[in-house]
Amino acid sequence: MWSYPSSCCAPNAAIRSQDPASHHKPRRAIAGPVAAAGLRVALFIGGVALSAEPADAEGAPRLPEIRMHRHNGVPACVTTERLMAFLASRNQSLDPRYRDIAKWYRHHGEAWRVRWDYAFFQMALETNFLTYRRGNGKPGDVKPAQNNFAGIGATGGGVPGDRFADVGTGVLAQVQHLVAYSGELVPRPVAPRTASKQLDIISAVRQLKRPVRFSDLARRWAADPRYASSIASIADTFQRSYCRDDAAQAASPIRKHSAADEALPLVPHPAARARAHLVAKTLWRRGEPELPARTDVATAATQAVTASQPAATEDQTSPSRLLGGLQAIAADVHARTADRPPEPPVVVPTPRLASRE
Image (cartoon, rainbow, N blue to C red; front, side, top):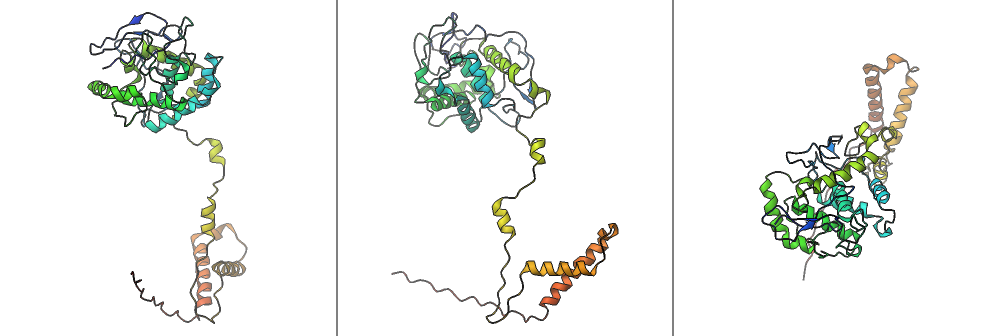
């Protein structure tokens, strides 16, 4: 089964799925300010498409693949702070309990390798920017208390769909449903709808024989043929507001060290500094004087070499001068330890096995 109607807030007339295998009730088409049509120019940020690529043969935009990989990551200009600012600009009465919703999308999206930026844009479309109202201002089938951000199980005709305990679980349910649409089986999904339908979903999407894109959700996740265009419109609106500067700088989707980062001195880890100051212990017999510390030997040798050498000039940095200095240090260390008698071999006693009774 392909058509999994989920929109709670669509304002227009119902459109049935084009898939003959679908047995779901018709869902409402999504239109209004988020509807879009025609060709779209691809915006590439560090090799990753943020907005839709040029329209395909059917006129729908070609959105990014659902799953993240080396060549399909979230652009650097997309941050949780910017997503929340974008959301608040479209919903002046945003409920405070949604203050971390963008962070949940990033958290679960990265864990499941899902393009969490487009999952967020899909949520904005499905819930009308978390207002849960249709274009005419009337409430949709899904209620805010359900924490259902993608209309999972909302098949139309007043069916509210699945309900989740909190915001984080609701985001996880949407991300897992997207994983199923990418063709991967989700073990123990949190959404009852995903658990009951994911085998049918996976069987259908694997017939594509290619990676599944967000644009493939049209007429599948939603019966609306303009579903992908509506998601693309939201993505383009976000890009125009928050990604122009990043596009000009060709920012990479994976954050790299900035000039400020590289200007910082390299400070070793405290544990590494502690290990660097450890001095190897030497075994000696009782009653014999202890050898001077290694640091003292090196200091004394360096002082001896320095005292025997004239003032440093440019030609003293030649390889021959450096080799002479090393030989002097080695001779000094050898002279300090030459008259020391050899250490007796260390005899390790044979361990005794403990008797177990």
